Length: 183
Image 1: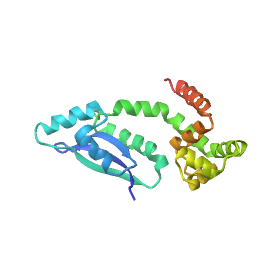
Image 2: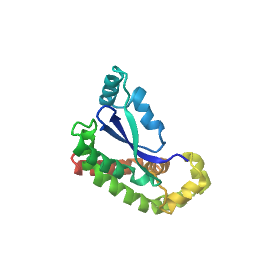
Image 3: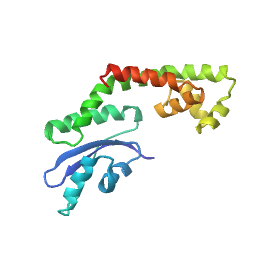
Image 4: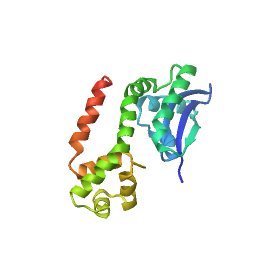
């Protein structure tokens, strides 16, 4: 089983962290930064190290079984590393996380309530859990867990809501909260 991790990319010459990230796929995500990061800043930094035949150290900062708190843990570690190294490459994203933190918290709370909405919609549309699972590419047991308000990822819920033609309403909800956060 792959662990959910918070990791740091450290300069081996100074032992300072220059990037904090999260992964639900174990070590594969941090390793990807060594060849092709999603961040131009990280790519440039890694390339500058490579030019002198040095590679970043990947250090696992924390492991968790709970995927739902990865964002919170990442924010905590970015905050801590920013205090040690003000030149951390994703500190600008840290301020965005802080702005959106309340939005994420609201969404997670709503995921607990949305299980009953999904169940009621499924029954209203006369669709079995098995049929809904087949239409969304999920297992029947996943649908059951989501309807009980457990193990509901945003991606899964949006997939189900899309199936019920409810995606537009959820998008409006998200946009309303983004506006509240200053986006």
